[in-house]
Length: 223
Length: 223
DNA sequence: CTTGCATGAGACCGATCGGTATCGTCCGGG
DNA sequence: CCCGGACGATACCGATCGGTCTCATGCAAG
Image (cartoon, rainbow over all chains, first blue to last red; front, side, top):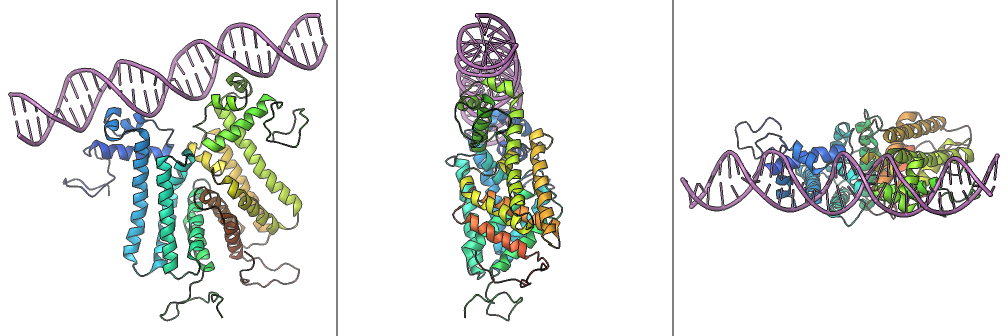
């Protein structure tokens, strides 16, 4: 994490603020911090350059415009989320349900840290009303990809209506992040997990071929 | 609200852009439109004055600063929401569950219209990271009031854990508005109603004195 | 050493921002 | 009638915005 890089050769840690990082990385770090905390429009390029311990000129040598920087920032955030999905897929290759719950758990665990400032995507959309804006398109593409992936997991988990189930899960996951922005965050994580459980229970999967697992979930009408 | 006090004759249409409305009302109308569509920071006072068919000077004669105008706008939006609650309480004085479902229905029906731009509160919070900002405080006070009201309804509906139930409902209601901002809005309303139903089913109320409802999960009736 | 280049520093530009000042006009109540 | 206050138009202010330009420095490769 933040303790690496002592011995040089730290190509791993992407997020350390060590002054020895190349300017481009420092700028992206600073942008991530400031955009997430203050909002896109509220942060000027000068402030980003200052926090990155560099100058506007260096910034514009790496990013054509502020919008390009915003886009790159969102691209990184999206990639981070996708990486979580990938990691879960790797950890539970044959258990789509575990992947779904893992994603929910990941978001649930992130809620307290998010409490002050909500999900970067949701917040950014509020500042990017133009659907044609490249950054906005990037967000929507990411969300669409996540929904597709969730739908696939639901299908592989045997849920009878994977599209609907994935849509409901998206509802709840996003609601949690917004809701955590204000009110009490104390039990938000567990609350989210409970609701996710309730949603999944509403979409009972037929018992796998193995020994019957649990719960007398309504048989899927058939019969 | 904007219909009281001023001696205008049209007490019906609250949002008409008729030029005969006093400037203050026109300014608030324009602000509502522009703030909701473009965002707070993206809209300048000049643009508001233009759309209100007046001038900056007239605007500043009625509002000390742009922030004051933002605050007043949010106050009106909050009052509108509260009015919905009031109307429901009036329509179903002795049926708290109907009030809850009515609120969910109100939001569900509003989702298509909201599709382009999300909930004004959520969007505004994204642009007001400072919790000390008066407008931000107004939003949080409104949300707190709504949560309190929902909690009270859940309690009166006999739900065993009203705080938890109200928190979960808030989760879902806000998630719906965010989720409707991007993805398919087609079935968002019915989806929301389904999830609300699922949440309420998770908090079974003891059967009232009337004819007994089946106490366990009833089959997933009408969607 | 010399050349080349990314960097750091800061002045600078036009546009726009929130907010103010000035002035002519209009309109309704004493 | 006439007068005061609200209104509309416009010019203006200082600050800040995104973005550009110039130039000195430091460093690494040829």
